[in-house]
Amino acid sequence: MNMTNKRAAIIVAVAALAASTAQADGIYYGGSLGYLQMESTSDGIGETSGESVVVGGLLGYRADIGGGPFWAAELNVDFPVDGEMSYSGGADSCTDFSPDWCDIDALARVRGLYGVPVGGGYDLFGSAGLAIVTGVAEDGGGVYADTVGTGFTAGIGVQRALAGSGTARLEVIYDSIENTDPDDFEKALENVGITASFLF
Image 1: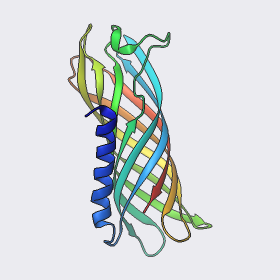
Image 2: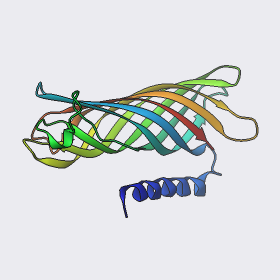
Image 3: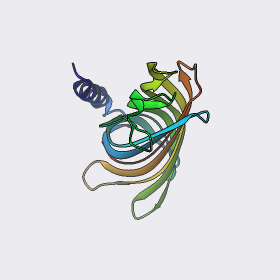
Image 4: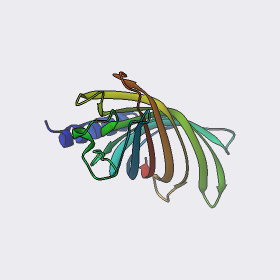
């Protein structure tokens, strides 16, 4: 199974799991499409960057607070369509010598949300939590290793329930990945993305 098929299978599995519980009070699920900018630095040695369209899915639980504000716990998983990064001169970062991230396969976020109604049927919300990234990073001269990184994520967004069913959401998300495994060389990864989601 190639990487595209694996990503599609994971999205379908998340949607199927969510659909099986979607009738329970407060549980929601959805799909998303967005744009992600990625930048990695390595302790003064080098810097890589990239950008990609991302597709993903999410599963969460929402609880209203007195009919006004709300909180939610949410898991979302994003897959870059092209997560490969490069140096500023255009050189492929997975074939050069600098211990940076060079390819991002998937990004998961486990986070809490808090939102308030702002009129016109819109909710404004903020989010914070844990980000987990998988991909490839150079861990020394010519050594390219499957790598897992962890850090924090934060975001701000707006959403609105639509007539009939479903909720449309637009948000900006920032991820800071400081911890990696393997970690023979220090490296950091920062992502900034804008994502549109539709929730059920």
